[in-house]
Amino acid sequence: MSLHTTNDKATSGPGFKQDMQTRHIVMLALGGVIGTGLFLTSGYTVNQAGPLGAVIAYIIGAVMVYMVMMCLGELAVHMPETGSFSSYASRYLGAGTGYTVAWLYWLTWTVAIGSEFTAAGILMVRWFPETPVWIWSALFALTVFISNVVSVRLFAETDFWLSLVKVLAVVAFLVVGGGAIFGIFETQQVQSAGLANFTREGLFPTGFWSIAMTLLAVAFAFSGTELIGIAAGETRDPQRNVPKAIRTTVVRLALFFVGTIFVLATLLPREQAGLVESPFVTVFESIGIPYSADIMNFVIISALLSAANSGLYAASRMLWTLSDQGHMPKRFGTLSRMGTPFNAIVVSMAGSIASLLSSVFAPDTVYLALVSISGLAVVVVWMSIAASQMAFRRHYLANGGRLEDLGFRVRGYPWVPLGALLCCALACIGIAFDPAQRVALYFGVPFIAWCYFVYWVTRKLRERRQVSPVAPARVPEAA
Image (cartoon, rainbow, N blue to C red):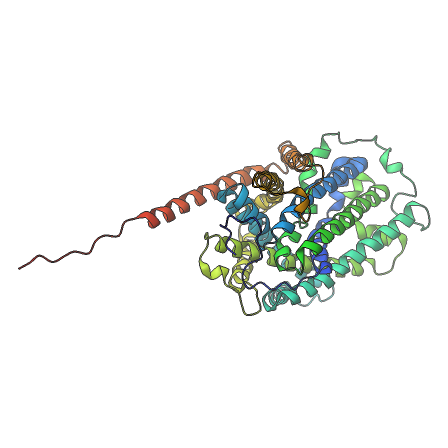
């Protein structure tokens, strides 16, 4: 169905197979969120904001993602489309905004995919030191590509099992870490049982403002939940499955992330939390769990492949959306016999490889710009979701719609979307005061302006071609 229709009720794109079930989209969102940021760098937030500050930052992040997902739920249930938030932004905020959101989200995932293949290859060298990294990276890239190209069903099943590995690792960490806090397990080299870390240096050893400065990193850690909206167009019975998936995902993420940060903040001193390669390994080894490093190596590789799998899916659907909206050549909107956007998948994979090469040949220029833009992009995308929901609600009611007819609606409107916008704005303001993160604004804001400019130029060119009069045929003069 064309995105330029005036009818609110929309479907997925033509030919997309609605093969995903609730368990698939729940794990798709969990798999997109639970990644190396949690397993490797979660201690950074504890180090920067202090134990209590880190817990507060992740609670704010959980509330923020809850509000954003409520907004997305109302839109996705009423209009289950593969284009998701880009389509909603185009329809209710303007085509230029939808265009910009699609490119921001595409760039976010393509930048991430290439680095994940490299990281997974490096981790494999631990077990196979004689094998070059590029062989493993190429093998993983081929696996993820096949998973996305063959069928939506194969992609969903692959992502489900990869995500399950990560979820089980987090649950095990919470159980073991909780046992250490309450003195059930003896620990070495980490804080003894109790909450001494929260008061040892005062409640906010790095200042209260440090909480706001870490919000962008927290928001980035929660990014991926919005994948539910993209998958809505390829989900069986989205009116029933999408709301169920949203509620289940938000609750689990809040428990997993806030619980994990609480355990880390309790067991690891603030000074040590930001230095260890994986706080999970530190905690497991201190309790005496054998082969902790190897277990986490396997989990992190699964996390990397799951994130790459989800990322390629999301990036290709954004290219398909741009083609469906008329901003890209039609060939990117064509689907294979199995209902997958083959050309869009190929180009997205090529983009990830280009990003990977930039990290090798231009790490301080091109790659720095790409990473900075992708770091800011998720917050901008979330803001577009909240703003789209508010515009949709006004449009829906103004055209005679009834709230009770909505399959899923935001409770506490308009405070929920306004709260989401406020939290996202606070994250942007916070990074302006952090020299290490400020570069995201330096590159991100000009990139957004560039997207709007390119959209305006291409629209004017299309309009000029459409209204350009056809020159009349020349009539030969009589002899």
